Image 1 (tube, rainbow, N blue to C red):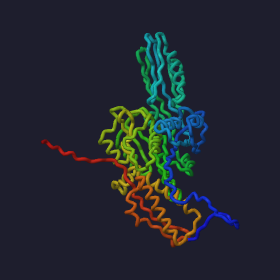
Image 2: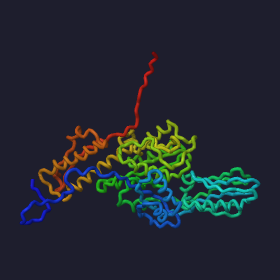
Image 3: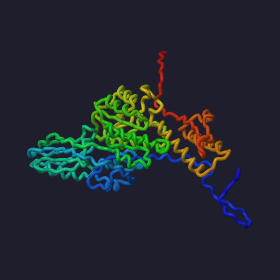
Image 4: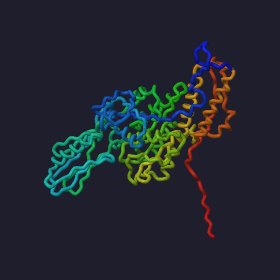
Length: 472
């Protein structure tokens, strides 16, 4: 072996030394999971379309996306779920359509005091009603109180006893029927009449294709969409596939949330994609949260899991409202969803929780396929590849091929695998030692070929026990 160094030539007697910061093991790279939130801005926001932008506090989000916008709501949901999440915002193409409008009509004159309360998702705003207050007066007060809630997803005006709420974002998806904002009104201890909320649905569809193209050059480990229609999930799948290709090597996972009427709707959506980097979480019928808040919160929980193969069974998504008890997935429904590649979300101990973090990759050639059903498997493979690439870039950049290179490279590949074995991400590396193979290509000068097994440690999802009854 010919030893080399970067010490300059000199004739002066003495012992000279330099530092090599890259010798020996460098440890595994940090498994930081960056989150990209894809949504829309409100009036006053300055974020350009298709320009992903990292944000570090809510003040920056307000300046870029506007208070109460879909992106602002997604950011808050992600930070509520895990405050250390590293978040970037991505604005999709502006929706060519109209905003949803909700109207609340008040009538009468109060003969006793009480409250009028407006509820959207899990938030509430109430105004007091005194004897003699007219519907016009209470409507005006209610509009003032609602506009004081700058984070609300709508603006309010009042006229002739009618409170009109206009969504801050355009599009059909903003309505509760599409998994968006649900608004209701109630009165308490007052005879002032408040009619139920009348909705005029918004129009126009979201299109994330151009936005994802703008984000393609950068790696975002987790991408949460504000919508869950098949067209936009298709764009997300294409983006994930291209980014994971060998020439790109940017493993990423996508997350969407759907509010469905039953198991079959969710399974049908998942099976139409059947992809290991895509996750669809489902709740039934209604929930006091939007699909974009659920997706953002779920992405933050995924990002908090620094050991990629560690299951997230039963983990809560803090800050997300709970479904009605009648809309809780039954055990049979949960099982069907999991087999179909859908993440059921259920209420446990007054929190909305992940049952099991599965991918939509549930079949292969029409037959059940279990290798990639848990998200921890693809996440572990991505991290293993990241570790191998990081080592290659440090130790083998600008090297030449010599007779000892293949063995050295192979041993370094094994060493990375052994470190991951210590971290309980891979296992049985000694048993797979003969399957680590490195050799020089005979077809392409300057190319080394590596075969690297990846025996991922599976997460513990189930324990089956038989309890024997003895009567003595």
